[in-house]
Structures are given as structure tokens and as C-alpha cells.
Image (tube, rainbow, N blue to C red; front, side, top):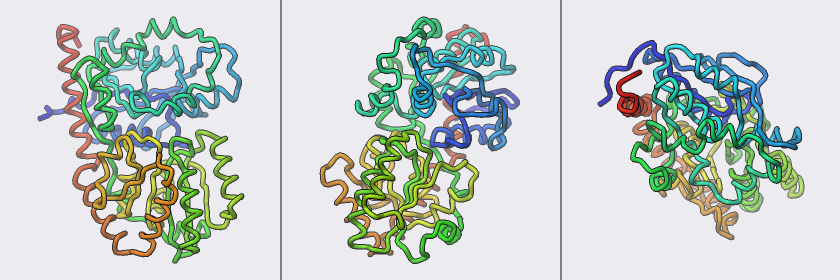
Length: 429
């Protein structure tokens, strides 16, 4: 049982980047837990880098965001390399951000949402100030396919690194071992991390969802705005346009589905973290004559009403990822009462219950596209099955994943971290 929260104290959240124009699951998590903390009387602040941002200081969703200049400590990086690192996986260095962590007033706890050098900066600031720090693993650490890891590292391939000394100074390789608590958002990441970290200060804490926000939405308005017929069978995917998210498989399945369901439409929504991959998707759409029934929409700000409307407009939500630490968009689809088809990978394996809250697909199988097309064809023909799966998913989201429930458990973890830090520092805070 958690103790009363110390009202008025500051929790510092430190993600690698945080911009409304490039919104994803990690940003949603940080913003929502910050909102819950603010309602509880805490003072959450987000301290991050200027990656992909224009403003150094702003409020997003009522939470102050402070950004600082940074660099990638490698020789020979091109502008395209830096842009790719900004989009995904960049191991940045920011001295001004570190100074901000040292100077932040009235800090209760530091919460790192990144590892490597940035996580090391949080670790070092916490130790110098004798404050507790926790680390959230949002995926991309212990549960990443080799091919994707290679793609993330490609911009720095054969580039001499001059930042190793700073990594050593900040203890970048000690972030997880020194953390007062480690949070895994996915069960598969927890299982792998538990055998690697070397201590038992580690917990599974799933992401949550604002059930009320996604409960109602104007689906017909979304369809009308994007030229989708009111009676079309509509498939939705909302995620980064990225090889990890595997929209290519969904497009291949959709092309096969159109033979059986000629009026079907598909909408892909998300920021393009891999422009070359995004171009390949558009080339596939053009080559297969799907331009009139496939919409690829750019990423939307988190407060764009079209995000909620899209869920209410669709008949089924599909997440065909090659790997997925958790899958917060599944919770959003459930909250809107929509059936879900998701890959049997990563955190999704524990999240979805087969033929109860959704259906699984096997993204690595050679028959995956045909199998997915068959699943979609069945859902198009069986509206009662769609209703059954959607209703079960909605009940699951309400019962176990509302942010209010998740925030209570997070507070308990914070208090465990504080107790550990007190022992480490001899009770000094």
C-alpha cells in the first residue's frame, strides 16, 4: 500500500525527445503519467533535448517541457545521419541538459525514459544530488530484433566516436545496475531484463489508456473528411511509419483482401521515422492500383481530434509489428470498442487474449499476408464477431489499464525507489 504523496515536490521526467509533431506511445505514457501526478499534487516537469523541436520551452497538455541543445559525438555525421538519429535511437549528449538536472529545484525523484548517455546524465545528477532515480524501459533494450538494431545503428556505421569518455564519466553502462528501480512496460522485456540487470529492483508496469477520451468519437466525420465511403469496411493502423511496425505486411494483406472485399479501405496514420521505408509503402500502393482506397496520413499531434475519430471510423484495428514492447494503440482501439488483430510478439503476447480480446497474426510466417487477409475477410463478413471482440477489449481496458490505476502502482514504485535511495545515501535526501 502506497503512502500519501508528498504534495508540491517535483518529479523530473527525462525522455530523449518530446515533440507534439512526432508523437508516439512513449510520449503518450510520459504525458499521461505527468497529468496524473499533477492531479495528485506533484509538480511534474519534462526535461529533454531539442531533437526535432523548434521551441526551447513550452507546455504540452498542461505539463511544462524544457529542451536543451545537444549533439551526437561522432565524427563525419551528415545532416541526413543526424536527422535519422533524431527520428530514432540517437545516443545524444547534452551538457546544458545535465546542468538543468543539477539545478532543478525541489526535486523528489528523477525518472529517466532513456538509457545510454542521456540515462547516464540522469544517473549522475541523481547521485550527485542524493536523489532517487527510476528508469522506464519502453522497449528497444533487451527485446529488439537484430535487423532493427542494425537499422538504428546505420547512421553511425564507420563513424569515429569521440563521446566514449563522456559515456564513462556519466556511467552510461551503469544506469540499470545503479537505478533505484527499473520499470518494464512489457512482459517479454521484463523476462529478459530480469536475467541481465543483476538486482531485483525491477517491476512490470503496463502502459495505460484514457478510457474516457477514446470512448466516444465522430467516426462519420473522419470518413467524410478523408473521402471514405460510409459503408466501406475500414481497416486502421496507427503507429510510426517504420519497418518495425511492418505496414508493408498489412498492405500486402490488403491487396489480397480487395479481391474478396472490393469496397475495403485502409488508413495508415503515423510520423515517418524511416522515410525510405515510407516511400516503399507509397510505391507499393501505386504499383498495385490502391491509391483510391489507401490513405497514408502523417503523424498527428496528441490533441488532434482525428486520432480519436479514426478509431471510431474503423471496423478493425491491425498492429502487424515485427516486435512491440507493449502496444498502447491496442488499448486505445479497445477503449473505442474496436476489434484488434495484433502480432504475436513482445508485450502483445501477454496483452491480447486470443479470440477473446483480439486475434493474433504471425508476422514472420511466409503465409502471414494471406492469413491476415483471411482474418480481415472473416471480420468483414461477421459484424457480430467484430462486436464481440470489441466489447471484450473495452471491458479489459476499463478493468485493468485506465491511467488512474496505473498511476497508483507507479507511486508505489516511486516509494520503493525512495526507500532504496535512503539506504544508499544513509537517509540523506
